Structure formats: structure tokens, C-alpha cells
Amino acid sequence: EEIKRLRRLQARLQSTPGDSSEEDRLVSELETINEKIRTSRQAQQEAYSVHREIIEDRKQRTEGLQDLRNELNEVRGKRRNLQKEQTRISDEFLVKQFQYEQYQRLMRSGRN
Image (tube, rainbow, N blue to C red; front, side):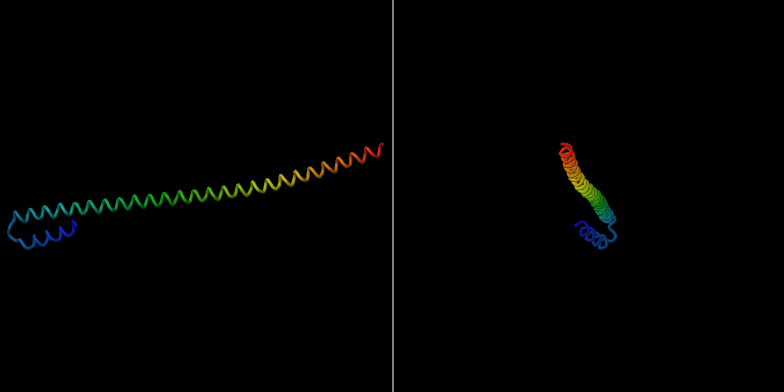
């Protein structure tokens, strides 16, 4: 919108040669419009920069979360393995305990 207005003013400026007060007014208006355009572009670039920072931050957080998920899965796997090992040892203990009790009964019955 501002750029269209700028072009119209430029055309008017070129079509009014010799009228310095009109020329000064048009130049002043052109400078104002140029400043608005420059400010708008700066604002757009700043908004773009902020947007890129947000995207980068989100990406880093997502990667961090993925690392944590991977770590959690590793810990869960180790826990499962430890539980299996604990069950195996517990079963082994129960078998040995039963064998020992059988041995003791056999020894007692042998003495009597």
C-alpha cells in the first residue's frame, strides 16, 4: 500500500517541475513514506529473526526430549534385565533351598 502511494508521489513529483514548494512537500511526503517502508521492513526482519529463534529453541527442546526418552528407554531396559536376573537368582535360591531341605530329611531319616 505504501509502495503504491510512493510511486504515485514520485510520478507527481516528476510531473510538477519548477514548483519548489510543491516539490518540497512531495519530497517530504516521499521521505516519510520511505521511512515507514524502512521501519516496516525492519519490523518484518525482526519478526523473522524472533520466529527463527523460536523454531531453533523448539528444535533444541525437542532434541533434548528425544535424548531423555532414549535414556529412559535404556534405563527401562536395564531395569527389565535386572528384574529377570533377580527372578532367576530367586528361583535358583528356592531350588537350592528345596534341595538342602531334601538332603536334611534324608540325613535325618538315615540316622533314625
